[in-house]
Image (cartoon, rainbow, N blue to C red; front, side, top):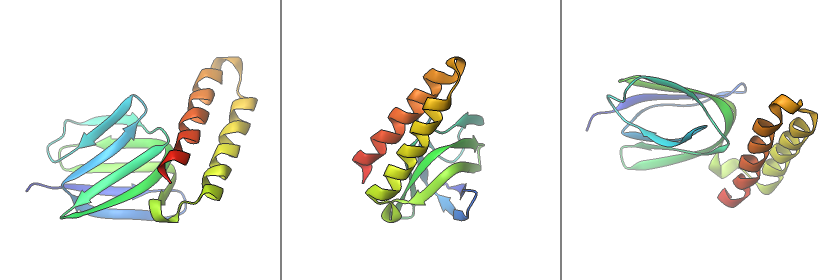
Length: 129
């Protein structure tokens, strides 16, 4: 089976660098799956669950914000926050919600809708743990 090189990086650390058969990504405009020979694209992330299938293993990460670049042979995710799902507790998600709440309260009128969407998406992370 053809693979795509997948790299996941957050400001704190590099979380993954694997040859994957598929990557399910929470894109800002909707979830999508990247596989080998995927059309080139650049998009933003929304808070959610990112899954990587490599061989018969599936590894899941909780991500918030950032960017995704996909080409035919590579997929790179630069996340504002990324944690292996196993490391995420309700306290961690509560901290992310507090950050998103503060950002929504401080947002200008022009940015209010985007900030409120980020807050709603971040609250939805509670369902993933």
